[in-house]
Picture 1 (cartoon, rainbow, N blue to C red):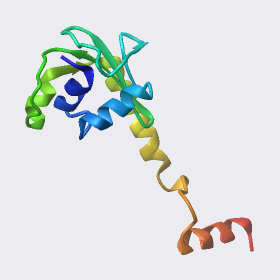
Picture 2 (picture 1 turned 90 degrees about the vertical axis):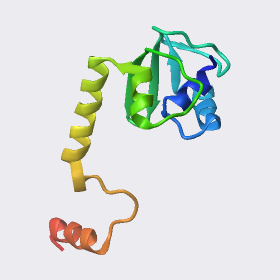
Picture 3 (picture 1 turned 60 degrees about the vertical axis):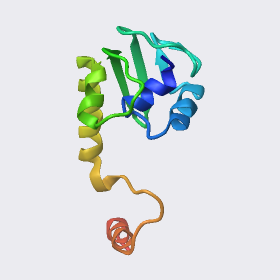
Length: 120
């Protein structure tokens, strides 16, 4: 079974073309090696899938060419414990940073807080 089709069926990507783009840009690796989208996937192989700051390391449990419901798709793979811990740690750090991270232009409220902090 093709790698891009399996990633789509396992619900890591909404479309096969998005899965193919991720594979082409080396966001998906099989056994720590860069691969092509047409590579066949076998049961027991280890996939590394990067999405933003998160990286999932999963093991393929079963193959499916049909995109099913999310609970069914979750049975196609198993995430390693180390990967799950790392994702949870990054999520906790992001949550702890909260409003400290300003994205884009500050809002009126944030601008006033900055001015108060600077003592103006």
